[in-house]
Structures are given as C-alpha cells and as structure tokens.
Image (cartoon, each protein chain N blue to C red):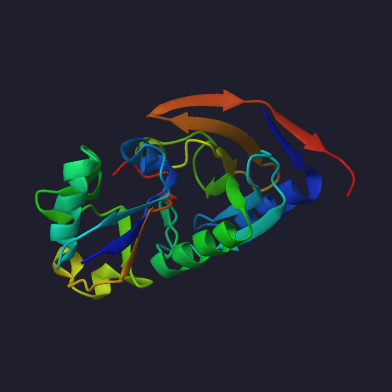
Length: 137
Length: 94
C-alpha cells in the first residue's frame, strides 16, 4: 500500500496537467527505510514526448547524489500517461529499475477527471496496490 | 590502478549488496571485464554486444560517458565511476 499526503498527490496531478499532452515525470523522495514519500521533485522529461519519458542523464545523477547525501530513497517514481489508462505499459515494465519504489501513474486523458494509481514493478511483474491519501500537513 | 564504482540498488545483488566496489582497467570496457571476474552477471546488465546498454547511464567523475568515449572512455587511477539505470518509460510500446 502507498500512503501519501494529499498535497503530494495534488502536486503530481498538477505537474501532469501542466505538461499535458507530453508525459510528466518525477520522484518523491523519503528518508531511507521509512517508505514515507516526503520531498516532491518534479523532473524534466528529456524526451518531451506524449508517449515516452526519460530523466535527463545529468539531472538523474544530481538527483541520486542528492538523495544519497540526504540518506533518502526514491519512495515514489511517478509519470503520466496522456492518452491511455494509468496502468504500466510494456515500456514502463521493461525500464522499471527501482524494485523498492511505488510506481505512480496518472492519466490525464480526460480533461475533468484523472486516474491516480500505484504499482510495484519487480522483475517484470506488476502488482497494483491500494493508495491511502492522508489529509493534513 | 584502482577505480571506485558506485553500484545502483538494482545491481547490488551482483555485488553481494555492496554500494561501491573497486575495479581496475584503463578503459571502461576493461573495468567492466574486471568487475565481471568478481561479480558475474554484472557485465550483461551494462553491456550488450560490446556497447553500453541504451538505458544504463555510466558516469566517470560525474560526466556521462556518452559525451566522453562511451565504453572506450579512458580511466585513470582514482577515477570515480557511477552506474545509474535510466528512469524512463511511457505509454509507447516501442
């Protein structure tokens, strides 16, 4: 299960809406070992594509250095699908390299409502999990 | 000639859980061959048909080797190598 603060959910959705129709992507880091997403880090989609996302390689290095220095982990790795459902594609599964992360997908295909779902992707196996949104803070 | 190599979480099963390992080699290819001798299976995760995999980023002293000499990038004693899988995906099924 993913437990996540409402303001962080809102921040992800806002980022996804802002970058629509391109895919938006980012990370929510949290203290190592806590499974608690805390620090919202929107990333640039270097692919600038409606069907693909990739962190810029230098941004990626800076991000991982920073998390290392802060003793953080990428608790959530998020991205948007802008014309399809919020479910991991074959591409998502092939490149999922953080077995400890919650992979959050947001679909912005509908103007008025969005889908917000979370998955574990480990060794090519996708498992959807419940999302518990925490109010307050 | 020792080079320090930072290993990402996903590849730590190959290094017995170690975050950093040491290796030797005067090029990135030679270093990866040296690592493979102690951490079997690692090379295949980094290299395909002799070239670096598209979705694995390797940095030498914080520079992306794609802008240096890719797998032929020269290494010197004391260099620091970082391996990070790309964070990528998307709706396409390419």
